[in-house]
Image (tube, rainbow, N blue to C red; front, top):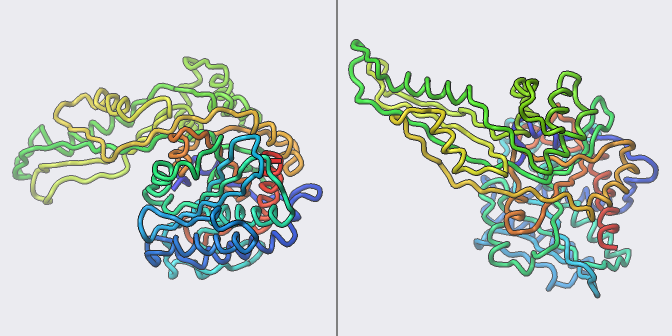
Length: 465
């Protein structure tokens, strides 16, 4: 769900070799690939068996119990009988700090076998990649968390705080299960902060690492329906008050409107640190944004840089259109869907008011289609960022760590809303020009997967050791 449009390029990365001895997870690497294979072979998409997420959660739970985790600390539960969410706790015997929540999801979008060149629900290793539905979004994250729990357990690691894995059942659809867990099972999930495998990572260019991105914020998703109505009539007698023309004129005004630039802690730091990584023509924009000069003349060109524009302000765009009922009749109705991605410092209510003001036509109704779920930005927590600053150079040399606000959505938005700061740090590398999540022949680089596995192992030891 969170992999969307242009902002997704910031979350996807080219596989790069880890420096030194990093990435050598040994037997854990073999285990992690095996767990990923097991998860991919369970079709947890909407078209799969109704209890598929429960099967997947139970399979991961069985591995943890066999590794020595008490059954009381490895639970499979769900909002509905067929839903399967795994909640597993690596318990500290004497915790000196509050727990950390570790997030992944085990559901996937559907995959049509006839559209793929390889079987979507089998893990196929080919040319250095692991192919299969969910291989990158997000079963790799789920398998990686379970494999590292097993590795730490076998090594006799004694954490100074509890670590809690949550593998959720419906991130790609409603997010109802993570909401239910937070509302009805809160003691199982309560934590100082959460780390999400479903966001963040390393951006590269031409095979070279450019930035380690940490997702600390997400825009708010909201869609609105614009509708014009008219008595209609015979097409041989055109009238000035045509519903299609009326709606088209309104959409033109929406297209021309620019929401005000609104920055938060995450985007201010992003624009500052992104300057040396940007294309030359984008640097004047970044310099003005980083300095907070929001009235700078050069920012008039910001809409020509879609990714930076989406990071700086609320955006609304027409995505669906319908009108008329016959080719020889004047239209009685014309409707359009306008999809908005709202900065977390604003709201759906404020966006609706702005659309009504911009459309400026009382005869066009504007209604919100579904409730919006706001998500406050997570603070740039030194406890986490200090660990990242210590670890990242050993894997990706001279790479800056950049906080990022994504235009898509993950389970992280519900966790943030529950008062638990959430950070996307997948550390998985994929080529931004070959993003296949939700698409045909989804895959993940095997080396990228093992690198991330080792990075998370070291990160967890530093955060809880």
